[in-house]
Image (cartoon, rainbow, N blue to C red; front, side, top):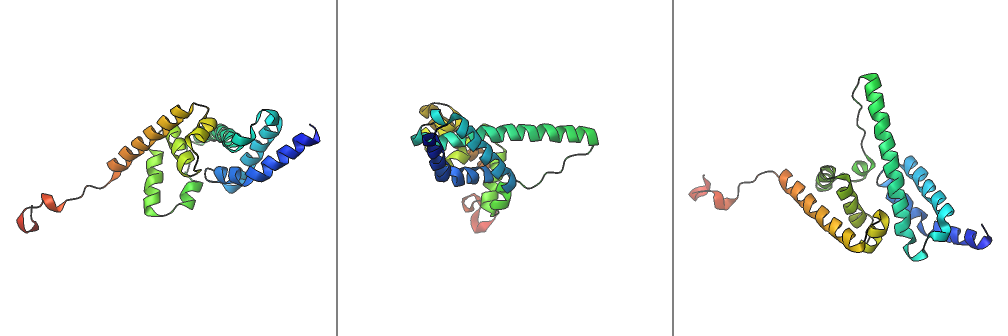
Length: 182
């Protein structure tokens, strides 16, 4: 590549590396996040001529999304194999998002996200955690803007249903008889 390409890559790297690292860090450990972020920028280097500067960050998030997906699938395969070989059940470690978010309400939302399909959960994370707009989400997941809007909307509805189902039943004063007795 020529010096113009190197300059462009350096500018994109400096402008977006921290955001890509944070995106990955909310999904995997710090060490893994750094490794994935570096892989993302290797892909950027190889595809630099095809990347539009105006949509570079969502494009980079899309590469990170797919790279993390590959990594998660590989981890699941290794865990299944290890479980089969050892005959023991694999211990589950705290996920990075559980470590970061400890408040009870936030934990309830994270637990509800686990009750959703992975694609629904990722749409909500992109919208809420990464604060991406529908056009940016469309670039990340590779769909149209209207499809991204619909996916986020449907994911919010599904999350609402999961959260509602997990709410403890409460007795409302209106359901009590006179004197507060049923």
